Length: 120
Image (cartoon, rainbow, N blue to C red):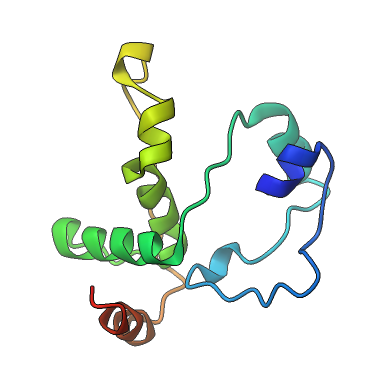
């Protein structure tokens, strides 16, 4: 999505991209219906690392006691991240941020093992 937004036209996955991500719900490409919405209505797309996704997912699990999937952890990771917080500040009248949390696509044991392997 970020590459398409930057290019100004719909792109597929880069050749050779193994699509390895804990956020497996986001491994798809934009389609003909979603691309115009992103192109015309989305101001910015911020990406985060796999570690940031896992940290954010774990934070929600531990602090909110909500079982979210790592794809939902992406939004939390973005909101906690440096790039977002440098771009969108309270003094710029950015007072509310909404993050959709969902949990239908998570293998808790698999994701927990990944967190443990990363020392989280």
